[in-house]
Image (cartoon, rainbow, N blue to C red; front, top):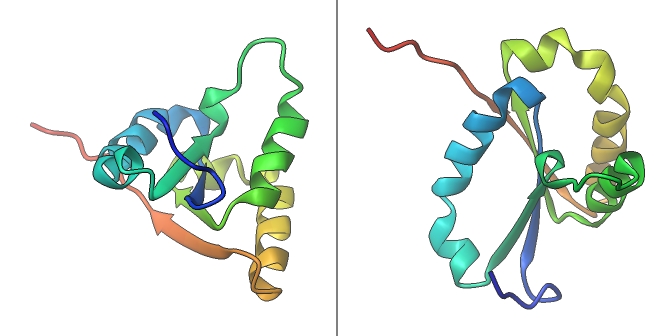
Length: 111
Protein backbone atom coordinates (compact mmCIF):
# COMPACT_ATOMS: atom_id res chain seq x y z
CA UNK A 1 0.00 0.00 0.00
CA UNK A 2 1.31 3.45 -0.90
CA UNK A 3 0.28 6.41 1.17
CA UNK A 4 1.52 9.80 2.23
CA UNK A 5 1.97 9.25 5.96
CA UNK A 6 1.96 12.97 6.75
CA UNK A 7 -1.59 13.33 5.35
CA UNK A 8 -2.97 9.99 6.50
CA UNK A 9 -4.92 9.52 9.67
CA UNK A 10 -2.76 7.08 11.64
CA UNK A 11 -4.65 4.29 13.43
CA UNK A 12 -3.15 2.12 16.15
CA UNK A 13 -4.93 -1.09 17.12
CA UNK A 14 -4.24 -2.41 20.62
CA UNK A 15 -5.54 -5.94 21.08
CA UNK A 16 -4.67 -9.20 22.80
CA UNK A 17 -2.78 -11.53 20.41
CA UNK A 18 -5.49 -14.22 20.60
CA UNK A 19 -7.83 -11.66 19.00
CA UNK A 20 -5.66 -10.96 15.94
CA UNK A 21 -8.28 -12.42 13.58
CA UNK A 22 -10.89 -10.03 15.01
CA UNK A 23 -8.53 -7.09 14.51
CA UNK A 24 -7.95 -8.13 10.90
CA UNK A 25 -11.71 -8.45 10.40
CA UNK A 26 -12.20 -4.90 11.68
CA UNK A 27 -9.44 -3.69 9.38
CA UNK A 28 -11.30 -5.13 6.37
CA UNK A 29 -14.06 -2.60 7.03
CA UNK A 30 -11.51 0.19 6.56
CA UNK A 31 -10.09 -1.18 3.30
CA UNK A 32 -11.38 1.66 1.11
CA UNK A 33 -9.87 4.34 3.36
CA UNK A 34 -6.58 2.44 3.60
CA UNK A 35 -6.34 1.97 -0.16
CA UNK A 36 -7.11 5.63 -0.82
CA UNK A 37 -4.35 6.67 1.56
CA UNK A 38 -6.75 8.47 3.89
CA UNK A 39 -5.73 6.24 6.77
CA UNK A 40 -2.72 4.17 7.70
CA UNK A 41 -3.00 1.48 10.31
CA UNK A 42 -0.61 -0.45 12.51
CA UNK A 43 -0.81 -3.15 15.16
CA UNK A 44 1.72 -5.22 17.06
CA UNK A 45 1.09 -8.19 14.79
CA UNK A 46 3.13 -6.34 12.16
CA UNK A 47 6.34 -6.36 14.20
CA UNK A 48 9.10 -8.13 12.27
CA UNK A 49 11.37 -10.72 13.85
CA UNK A 50 14.43 -9.14 15.44
CA UNK A 51 12.72 -5.79 16.00
CA UNK A 52 12.79 -4.26 19.47
CA UNK A 53 9.06 -4.72 19.99
CA UNK A 54 8.74 -2.37 22.96
CA UNK A 55 10.28 0.52 21.03
CA UNK A 56 8.16 -0.26 17.97
CA UNK A 57 4.95 -0.26 20.00
CA UNK A 58 5.96 2.93 21.85
CA UNK A 59 6.69 4.69 18.55
CA UNK A 60 3.31 3.85 17.03
CA UNK A 61 1.44 4.56 20.26
CA UNK A 62 3.03 8.03 20.43
CA UNK A 63 2.43 8.83 16.76
CA UNK A 64 -1.11 7.55 16.23
CA UNK A 65 -3.96 9.96 15.65
CA UNK A 66 -6.55 7.37 16.70
CA UNK A 67 -5.90 4.57 19.20
CA UNK A 68 -8.39 1.72 19.15
CA UNK A 69 -8.47 -0.54 22.19
CA UNK A 70 -10.19 -3.77 21.18
CA UNK A 71 -11.64 -5.03 24.45
CA UNK A 72 -12.46 -8.72 24.65
CA UNK A 73 -12.46 -11.32 27.39
CA UNK A 74 -8.86 -12.12 26.36
CA UNK A 75 -7.83 -8.47 26.60
CA UNK A 76 -9.38 -8.01 30.03
CA UNK A 77 -7.76 -11.21 31.31
CA UNK A 78 -4.36 -9.94 30.16
CA UNK A 79 -4.91 -6.36 31.36
CA UNK A 80 -1.52 -6.12 33.06
CA UNK A 81 0.07 -6.32 29.63
CA UNK A 82 -1.80 -3.25 28.42
CA UNK A 83 -2.06 -0.97 31.46
CA UNK A 84 0.94 1.14 30.46
CA UNK A 85 -0.29 1.46 26.86
CA UNK A 86 -3.70 2.54 28.14
CA UNK A 87 -2.17 5.07 30.52
CA UNK A 88 -0.08 6.64 27.75
CA UNK A 89 -2.98 6.65 25.32
CA UNK A 90 -5.33 8.31 27.81
CA UNK A 91 -2.69 10.95 28.62
CA UNK A 92 -2.39 11.75 24.90
CA UNK A 93 -6.18 11.84 24.69
CA UNK A 94 -6.40 14.27 27.64
CA UNK A 95 -3.87 16.55 25.88
CA UNK A 96 -5.94 16.36 22.64
CA UNK A 97 -3.03 14.68 20.86
CA UNK A 98 -4.95 11.51 19.98
CA UNK A 99 -8.45 10.14 20.03
CA UNK A 100 -8.83 6.97 22.13
CA UNK A 101 -11.72 4.70 21.21
CA UNK A 102 -12.53 1.66 23.33
CA UNK A 103 -14.20 -0.99 21.19
CA UNK A 104 -15.80 -4.04 22.77
CA UNK A 105 -15.39 -7.08 20.56
CA UNK A 106 -17.05 -10.43 20.94
CA UNK A 107 -16.27 -13.85 19.62
CA UNK A 108 -19.46 -15.34 18.30
CA UNK A 109 -19.67 -19.07 17.86
CA UNK A 110 -21.69 -20.02 14.83
CA UNK A 111 -23.82 -23.13 15.18
